[in-house]
Image (tube, rainbow, N blue to C red; front, side, top):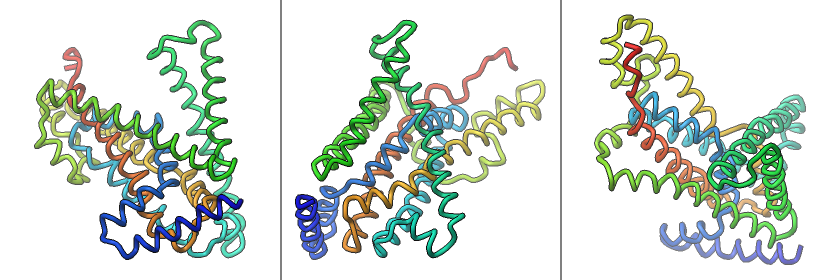
Length: 318
C-alpha cells in the first residue's frame, strides 16, 4: 500500500510539472504514465475486430476504410466521458448508478457487461488454439485442443492475477499488455509494408477511403457495380451483395467498443488510484492505447484483404 501511495504521489508531481510544459513534452509524460487505455486496446483487438476488418475489406474494399476508425472515435468519446465523470467524483460507477439513477439500470449494466465478457472471451480460446496448432504445429491430436485451452487459461489467469498483486503486479500487467498489443499491430502493419514493397497499392484510393461515405449503406461498392450489371439478374445480385455489405458494416461497427469496456475502464482507473488530476491523462491514454493500435491494426487488415480479395468472384456465377 505504501509503494502504491508513493507511486501515485510521483505521478501527481509529474502531471503538475507536465501541465507547465509544451504540448509535445506533456504528451511524452502522458505516454509514460498511460495504462488503462492499453487494457481497452487489448480487449478490442480480438477475433471480432480482426475478422470484421477482413470481411470489410473483402466486401467494401478501400471504400470502407473510414468505418471502423469513425466508430472507434465515437467509442473513445464515450469512454472519455465515463472516465471524466468517474475521476471527477471518485465514486464507483455501479454504486453511483444504483444510488443516483436506478438500481435496475445499474444491475442491467453489470449483467450485460458480464455476458459480453463471456461472448467476447470464449471464442478467443478457439482462435488461440487454432494459432497454436496451425502456426506453431504443436499440441495437435485428439486431446490437443484441450491442452491448448488449458495453457491459454493458465497464462491468462496468471496475467490477470498479477493485476491484483500490488503496484509491481499492475506494472507487469500493463507492460505485458503493451507488448501484446504492439505485436498484433506490428504483425498486420508489416503485411502492408511487405505488400507495398512487392506489389502496387493504389494509395490514392486508400487515402480517399478514409472519407466517410454513408451512401454505401444503400449502394454496393463501386467495384461490384459493373460486375452486377453483367450478371443475368442484376437486382438479385445487388440485393445479395448489399445485404452482405450491411451485415459486415454492422458487425465491424459493433465490435469497435463493447459494453464490457464501459464497465471495466472506470474500475481500472480507480484501481490505479487516479483522480481529478488524471483527467487529461485519461483521455490521452485512450487515444494512445485504444484508438491508435485499433486504427493501425484494423486499417492494415482492411488494406490487405481489399487488395487481394475485393471484387474477386467465381465467373461461373455470372
